[in-house]
Length: 336
Image (cartoon, rainbow, N blue to C red; front, side, top):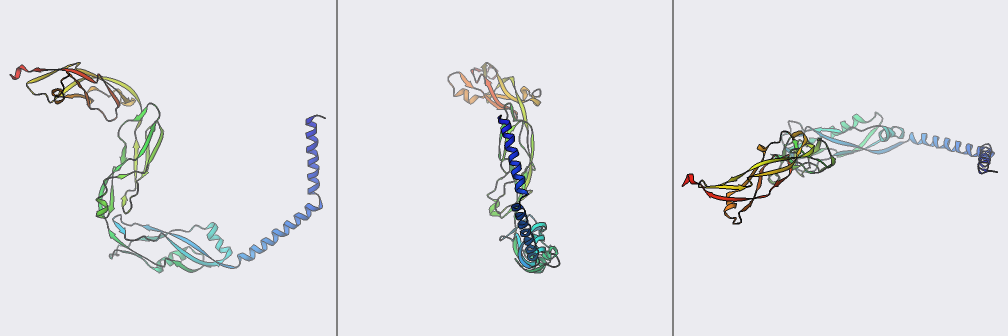
């Protein structure tokens, strides 16, 4: 007998044994047992759900339309814990299928004493609105809210980007990171505001950057400070870069009128990385290569370093060739 025939015979034998088990008396007895067990559990569950129970429900508190220039002097309640009583079948609605809405609290304009008041009756009414007619409210905590507050000082603070940007090879930032709004209003005590110079965004990590990104980013919270707004829009201008070379004249600054300076060579080649979109627009007028007369006076070797003193901020990795030049000081005959 081949291996395939042997496997086939084994499968047929197993099928026969299985059919024999399910058609046997033992299986029928097991089915009857489990049926009555399930039926008993159902009757027990129905009876249990008709009994009354107590459970606790949590209602979040939502503070609405609070002015940014007020600060609570102590921690304010964030939820109300209520104990209720009803039949088990009704209570299942609260625990399984019913969503409890927040209790909304507003600061009334007539409250001039510097305290936010929410009475026991207000809280009770908010809870009762969400309970079914058969549900009894036994107790709740807190039973009232009295939150003293004080006026805050105001200061406008600049927003600074905080993050790490990793570029795909050949891509870089093509300009300043744009943040809108770039300043936010901070409300806090005068002592706290005096220590603040800027507000940071939440840390942003960009991997494999190869295109301009725009994100809405939350500001990093500061204890005891209200920030308005709490989010800003950050734009990261990421572009593909290429290389460009320009030849620029060297400017000598601070030369007295009775002197003139001869440089050898008098020009320098600048090679830099530039965004593809600005390749044609990049010109010599956007750069400045200088040396300072004071450095010449203090240099007896007849050579001096050249400096790149102006370039577009979106140009990267500029290199100069040569990096130093020879110079010759001559008396200016026009000022003898």
